[in-house]
Amino acid sequence: MNLVELGEKNIQDRGERLALVFEDRRYTNVELHEMGRKLAGGLKSLGLGRGDHVAVSMSNCPEVWVCFHAIWRIGAVIVPVMFLLGEDETRYILDHADVKGVITSQDLVDKIEAASAGNEKIRHTVVLGAAEDSKHPDFHRLVAESAPEEEIADMDPHDTALMIYTSGTTGRPKGVMLTHNNLYTNAVAAWEANEWTKGPISVLCLPLAHSFGVVAMNAGNLCPYPDSFGVLMRWFDPEEIFRLIEKYRANNFIGVPTMYQVLLSHPAGDKYDTSSLERCTISAAPVTEELYRAFTEKFGCEMYEGYGLTEASPAVALCRPSMPIKTGSCGVPLPGVRVMIADENDQELPRREQGEILVQGPNVMKGYYKRPEDTAAALRGGWLHTGDVGYMDEEGYLYVTDRMKDMIIKGGYNIYPSEIEGYLEEHPAILEVSVIGIPDKKYGEEIMAFVVPKPGETLTEEAVIEFSRSRMTKFKCPVRVKFVEGLPKNLVGKVQKKELRKMA
Image (tube, rainbow, N blue to C red; front, side, top):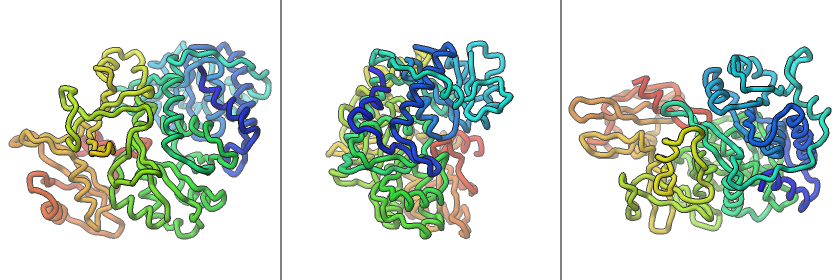
């Protein structure tokens, strides 16, 4: 079993078709496939092969698709390295992951060289757009000069295909080992759960180096509709998104809540014809009722919330077109995936009672690379312990409410920041808010809110606290409020509460 077979079968079943548009250049599935076969031959000529770890670090472009095809074709393991990471973070991943080859772009090569200095395991660095005097092989020259690799490495379903390093909110990032079977079954389940009855034309701006982008690539090969294709963006650009929706009559957009918030308030939203947009998928952080209502009303589309994490390949649950939408819920588990809400002793809790979200299924990771103790802790009892807090209702809908590490324990009581954030976001002058616990001699922890006011609005700490007291019990109200221009977020839009604690 090899994930490359998805693309091969796609061509056999559907023939040549438009697969991808990037910066208004069109690529067919056959063109990308042939580039992948030739790059695979080039990588083999450099001495890379089965079981080797190959890092891919570049911004979104069709060549990322080609890299994934080529690396899997020769039986190697892909190690995506987010192009926005700093030199120290990149150095750690290249070293810890035992990388033997790197594929990057000319604008990043200086950082990659600095991060790999002294690393004797790395044999070659292939550079997209390499300078003429470069000591590194140029990507397109390697493709042009290499014979296509005819064979597909026969992989065991449980062989590692992808190793994504988590964002490292606590300690060093961990390399999540995802197998060919993990990614295949998750792509199949995600495609089935989306329930498309015609060809999606999807605007894709999430980083392909993120697990969300990987499942989108794989699920695209399962689509049976000949008029379906992806419109790939190098990175998030709100006005460009509106332009692309209008030009290509896109009916699908995939993003994180921060992106939707920006799109909702961006003036370019009224300049373009976005009437083709039918649905949006949103994940990576809980969606507020206000954002859901405002976005779907303005753009006349439906929004389907999902839940996942890298360790689950990543999709766990998704709202379905055939099922009622429940605001605040990320839908029901994907086919073949089980979810349980558990207490601190891993015992199942009754419906609507909050606890840790545990996941079981063929999508659950193989483990963390060179981290046996962390692997055993995360997969104890045969369940993936997500570290996320949530509950399920009587109809099996999942609600994600918080992260366990973000829970505030005040006077012995568990307080979930998302509940307070939800109330404060109802204030008409508040754009964004994030709540953390701060040390307190009396209660152990007290509550502090970081607030981003809407443009042109003026707020005071007293006004925010008074508003919170009108919405919830005083015990849960913040005692301190700090106004900021923006909340610190990671590369996929999640608020970094670790940074807020430093600021506090």
